[in-house]
Length: 439
Image 1: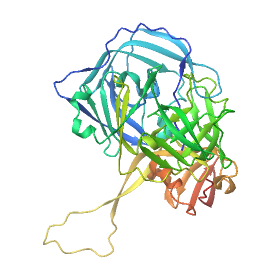
Image 2: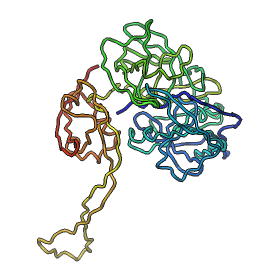
Image 3: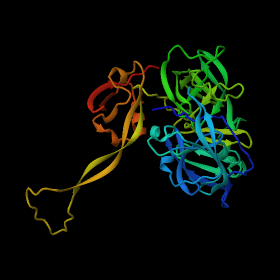
Image 4: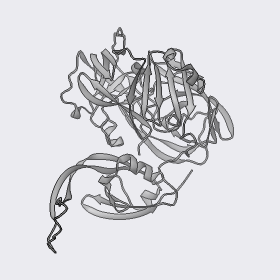
């Protein structure tokens, strides 16, 4: 699946009068609990915008709140709108957006009555097709800036505390405390990477909105990709597609924790040319690493806290098929339902040979499309192409899978045989290939 480093952007035209107080508690509780969905290592939370219920990505890697997928939110009203240009990851040109002030954002008992939102007008830019679930926007710094935020990846919930004093000091002793710097309203840490047999000190953005483990930016001095890598499609940004290299490093050290052989991406220079870099930044740490911890963000005191969870020792997997697959709309599926008669205890006579009554139910199910095929990958060698629509996977109709299940299947184990039936402009093609490790 696509690595979703989509929205680390520069506001190309930016006008803002920043006087709002931000989120406030509307209850007397010490904490507000918010359940979330974890999809492709990304945290999706329920958010109400101006009275409309939506799903937002929780992303420490963005400064401002962003909204897209407006076709699903026709009833949403906005205030004080002006047109702007934005750009970000990818090699394309700036895109049109709207800047809106004085919006009401509600997350359980956590409310901001004067919230700024940036509305993306390009319907092609959204998370929904890549995650297979509706995702309407992104929220970042405004959510984190004034509160003590605990994220429990294993149990799929987060807690919002008024301050660190409302969190158990006894519990906090089990966490590893790590200082952060807040620059351009984003958190950065220092960590060590063991790359090409050298231990290198790096400055990394802590990015809950990135699904990969690590991104590093190559330079002529100390950061160069290992000899063993493959060229890969890393995702899509505001300004176009992102390409680069995929590899592994020997070890990653964060605080007192060591993670052996994590996967790593090296985006090419063209893809990151529009990214606003803080001084000394070397890359990002994303959800594939963060999900291995219980994480606490304390922006006010410039700290994060980490405690390893049950996923800590899981291997770092990657897509071995070479196929990028995304949700591409819905289709009507006819489902056969058997009608069974409820019999009372003394009704034992059965008419032999009587046909069972059948009813048909029509349901909307997802369509999955191959959006990219890596060169020289198992998928390409099997003959699959960009634009193929997937009918079946391993003999099961594709619409019976969730997109995340397909992702997990293509990362599962080397040597596993995958069969696919695809529709290529009306022609049915059947292929088989084995997952193969390169790294």
